[in-house]
Length: 87
Image (cartoon, rainbow, N blue to C red; front, side):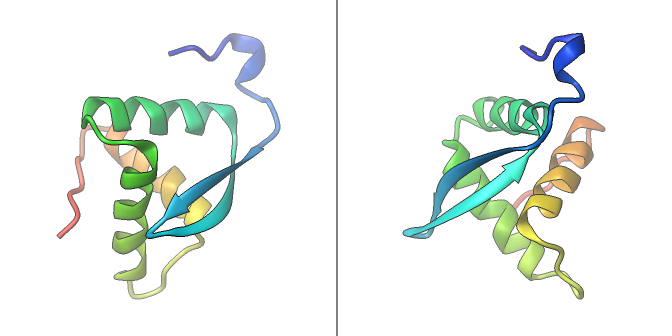
């Protein structure tokens, strides 16, 4: 992972992503961007495709969180070895 000790507490960074043909901005801390990138590489998926899968999963929840929160939860869950697959 390319996050140095001083970068762990870096403020969130906003990036644009296209999901299902729609442009959206997502604000995440660099650590979560790195974890998301790593998860997408592991699955051989573009980040946009992985975020689209996470978005579908979050919208199926009884009380869907915001997309940035869903990404943070998903990558943490994935990091713990609990892989989640889209239907």
